[in-house]
Image 1 (tube, rainbow, N blue to C red):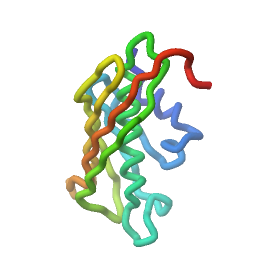
Image 2 (cartoon, one colour; image 1 turned 90 degrees about the horizontal axis):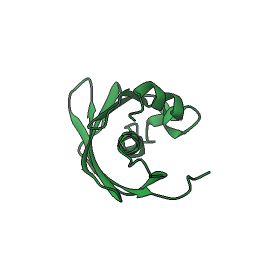
Image 3 (cartoon, helix red, strand yellow; image 1 turned 60 degrees about the vertical axis):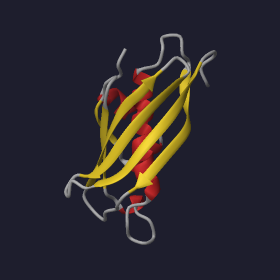
Length: 140
């Protein structure tokens, strides 16, 4: 069962993605999309976008994509590796992310994500996330 973008946005309220203003704009099993509008809280002290803001956007969309692809008997997942290559930065506007699966196994999933600056079209960062699928009791 695929969770809708609006359902993910509701789940984000009161959690880090909601606190940062992350908005899921497309939810599917083969692609997740989302965006983050610039705010002062997302910036580093040097006046540029904080790398953690980009990482949170990418990791969240990869994680939500993983949720949409969990085996029926899985209890959840956890990110076990996240690699990021930062190619640029920005000071205003909106950043967008597209995440797509590379591997959807019973024990692991691997997702790639690209983050870009909407206004300039520049790619800001590339990511690869590996999630471990969890079985047994769901976490409290």
